Image 1 (spheres, rainbow, N blue to C red):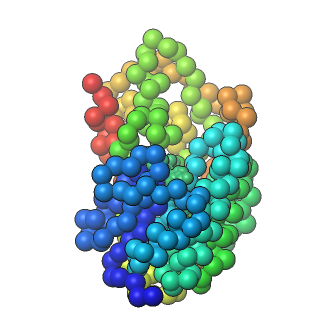
Image 2: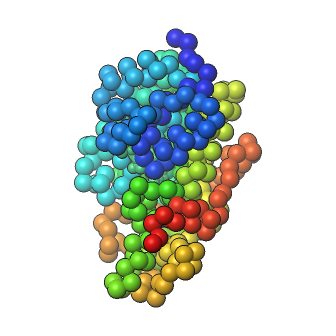
Length: 303
Ligand SMILES: NC(=O)c1ccc[n+]([C@@H]2O[C@H](COP(=O)([O-])OP(=O)(O)OC[C@H]3O[C@@H](n4cnc5c(N)ncnc54)[C@H](OP(=O)(O)O)[C@@H]3O)[C@@H](O)[C@H]2O)c1
């Protein structure tokens, strides 16, 4: 079946990262079939990715030249609450997509996570052995495995904690920190333990575009790639940066250097710094400085 030039099938187009990818590819002249599930904004198509027949039918009818699979259940606590639902979207839906792109000979880029690693021995090279600590990380790793099991030219892109323009402040684990800052009458503790390298969604969207263009020219652009931000913070460190950018007081917030197991039973890796050299050798990858990215992301939420 002939596919069409610059036609992108994008799952999770209503999500935090999917919205940025949609915008980036549209700007570059791509035609997009963007799927959503509960947040079907104008221009998007409702598709339950756990429905094998509907998924395969939609992809075959659209005839994309490239597919990016962003949709997932990515909140670790929600995965623990509904393991079966999470396996359906994070693993089974990935399998349906990988099977159908294999049939029509179209490359697929699967967005994965630094949570496939245990965080004990960073930086992680693309061939480092994963060892996820929580079920979310395990389901995403299984999603990677099914992606790479079909076809020969699929791509897995592992990314760290993301932030960018949000529909609600708690949509990102970074922007949610603004809530603690604004509630000056509520003293609170914020973790000063685990290390994170946040990335702006626009940086990841640009990487996806560069990779799509390179992959369509060169079949050797396949397998696993890593990206993460260049600055390292604890959650408390990010909160202090946000406070400084917006000149907000933060003396009501105490850094908490204890293991976070007291606040959540879902374990998280300590330091998942990813080795980004494979992408950088291709000339791909830009890091938006955190203070610049967070200012644009949160500006409209500051009264
Ligand atoms: N956000 C992060 O910090 C982060 C960090 C590392 C990796 N990642 C990975 O990056 C990717 C994108 O994450 P994100 O932050 O953009 O996630 P998100 O904001 O939670 O968006 C998830 C997307 O998946 C869709 N979806 C969920 N269940 C579905 C179903 N049954 N059928 C069809 N669509 C369904 C949602 O659609 P509706 O909203 O319309 O229901 C939404 O578009 C994920 O693969 C995630 O694992 C994210």
